[in-house]
Length: 235
Image 1 (cartoon, rainbow, N blue to C red):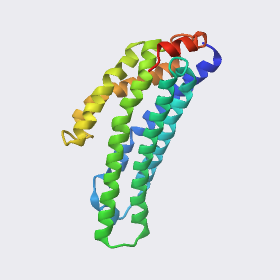
Image 2: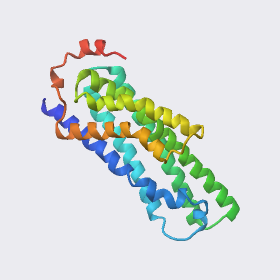
Image 3: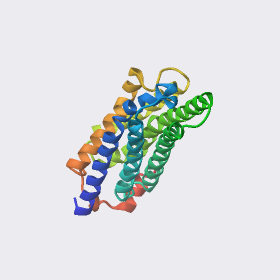
Image 4: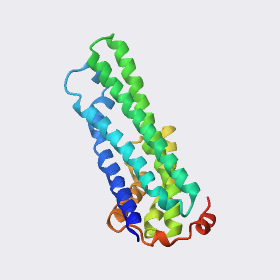
């Protein structure tokens, strides 16, 4: 593996792990606001909410970074998948930032100290509802689409051990089905059922991040004949 490709794999792996580190604590940090409708009327620190929104932004930027780092590699096997992965990661990031902005808007309303309590409660509930739907469409649906673009190439080209992208390919329909069930009230997005359905996708993203960071790619990408494989792996 040439030095440039190794650096791209390292960058992508590190950024994947950054998305994990940034996303893991945010639900608990947001809970005082998202789980309590009257938070906007209360007093106390909003530092946790602001920090959680900042972590969402970091997660969004790191997510785009994974696609940018992998683009020169993935395009050698499928230009369609490379462009699709960047697009899906960017859309996921945009949705995640919309959710963060909605909660920051509640913080701003709370700190303004003006407005009728009933109107503030209504505004807060609306913004929190926006965040919840953003959480469903962003971290809910989009990782499945990401996996279909990237895991397919990783599996066919054997860039990493095949069991790693296989987790993503199995997890994509499971996560999609779970998110659709959540939309129609089948179960809560933050529930044991949803967590079980999301586990394969989470395992895929964590595993591919660790593998790329530690070992790079399983085969020398620089020796690949790009035009031939682009035709063979065209999606």
